[in-house]
Length: 331
Image 1 (cartoon, rainbow, N blue to C red):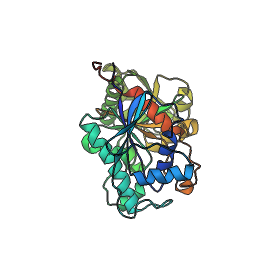
Image 2: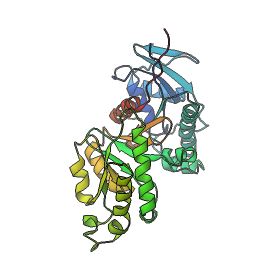
Image 3: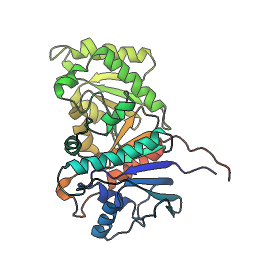
Image 4: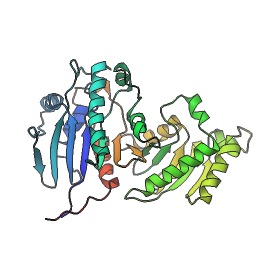
């Protein structure tokens, strides 16, 4: 028989909606892929959400798992620091707790004990208050995998980012022929290594109207077009640059096309307009799958029982779809 894929799920910032959406998803009424799910969390925060939501996760005891048909659920208890759990604000303790959940899951994935890691939202401000040198999940992963790529995935639209959590000034500095060519090749390899195979790419221009033949900027002529031509010669299915104000619209509904955005907001604004509740953040170029919700901690509604878990469900489904096939085992 084929073994269930092992998917780690982290709780996120305990002061945000992460505990609530995790509790909602694993309360037994969500249609999830067959898998062995391991929650990296503190039991007390999950039990608090059970009380608010009046739902039971039927959390397993220490060292045990709870079977649910084609699924099993385990809790990997991660102690939270004193003071963690205050809702609605960024705090040092919450930042440290959310990092410990993520760190624990990544450690197991790097050892080969998980095929995928799915993350609930963290607060970058909380991580900063905790003295952590990484701005977020992707930056921490880049410590081990410098080529990690941040992408956003939904059924109608898929977007990959050349740069993400840097200033616009620094992002513009990355728009060079060599950097772009290397990125195009890395993105193509990363997707080819998943179960879903290779995709086509449409590159967004940097300037209005993609530079208007140099009248509105020369980056397209001097850097982007040569990089695209280099990648085509090396076998990448890529075209562009296209005017930024139309490339995303034209890609909607084309399921085998990724738009490559040249900086964070260029890609995230159209993506979130298109798929805010169903979008998934995915890290490519890792030896394991990592997906995340496409929203933040929503401190303003934390603890009120109003959070929508749809993005977490989609993140779990994508993680299962992208994970390498589980090995067959005798039985």
